[in-house]
Image (cartoon, rainbow, N blue to C red):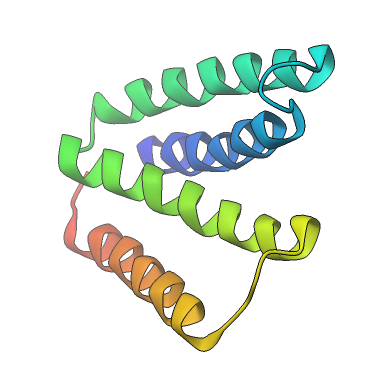
Length: 106
């Protein structure tokens, strides 16, 4: 169950980081409220996952999911550049997240 909470926490990190981008520096109310709500939800789920999973694994996987998700949305929604070096970097993050999952026992 801890891995599910951690996965959801990572997904919600992607939601709040995207909403933060849309908030235009917290000058737009609805995206700003979405940012704060999902930020809190993400951190609470991370804390629940950390009750069972190691700190290093939990935090790294959470950040990794957020980084990969933000990268994908940055490219698809915001037209950020996509080049081979950036793709390799994201694939390395993905590999690290998978290896941590495999190497960590609940």
